[in-house]
Amino acid sequence: MLTTKCAVVGTAQGGAVSWSGASAYNELLISPGNVVVNPVPAQGQYGPLNAGGYMYEFVSAVSTDDARGSFTVAACAT
Image (cartoon, rainbow, N blue to C red; front, side, top):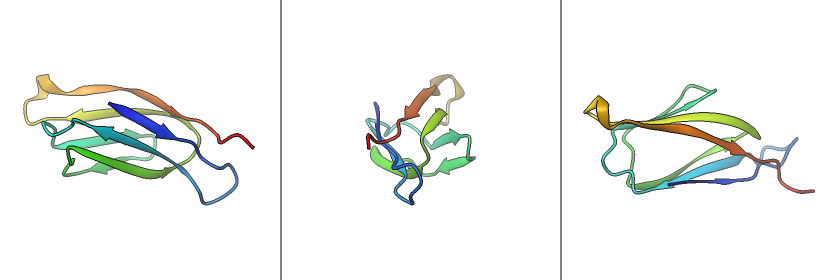
């Protein structure tokens, strides 16, 4: 499960993506940005991320078990 935290546009306070239940995966790939999280803890967070759209992939040792999708980091309300 992924959740996002908003990004404050024009500052260093970028957004973040959090996950839980990822204990079966070896890597988390996020693009754009060529982010690689390895090893992947069962729950965690990655940031800062700018507001915008991203693709992710949780990669397991068995390629048929990969999970992928997309998420959006919204700009924080002003």
